[in-house]
Length: 281
Image (cartoon, rainbow, N blue to C red; front, side):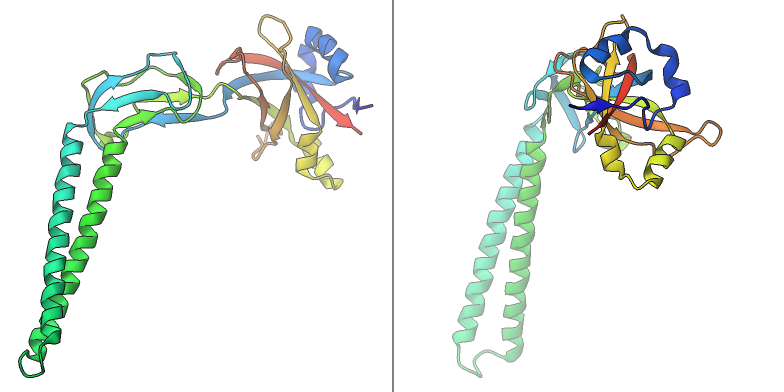
């Protein structure tokens, strides 16, 4: 049977004790004995700025503020006319470069077959140099075609994961200048979400000094959350990190917990109450 200790190894008791109440009573039925509790802020576990790869005009925005999207959904469509022309021009340039290379190689082969004295050494060197230059130009044209195709391919931006959209900063038909460095919008992942809380250095120091690894320490903590309306959240969470920096006056630092959020109940900026329980084998 898993037992839970009467103290939380990372969090400050002074921070957590004032808000015990209903959360601790509910949690005791499933997570073991109540230890202490505190407040936390919901933050995105992951976000993605939707940005143009090259300057271009927006043809259509396929989302609105607050819309939920799925991985792979089309979000932004840019004008493709000029980028398509660039691909066609690059294809033409590559074809010409290949033709010049074939001609240069043919000229070199012809001169190499001629007997000594008919073609001077200088002419032969020039033919070899022309062939090398033509080969380099063909390689350059091939690279430019790949670049043109790549630029054309990113004129449609798709969602890299499920999430919710922020408000767009641009309207349709607007010209986006990549030099300005502004994202079009941001996609926020809502499952899972992170909770930012405060942790106590003394408790962390004591456990690490006793030889316990941080990974083991974090793995022993179960988090239980109370929503702003006083009801218990249906999913338990886990600690991801201890604090990397502490306030010199309070000895407190930021720690991050993670909760599954398949119903999208938790939203960034929400203030919640959290209980922590340490598992003891």
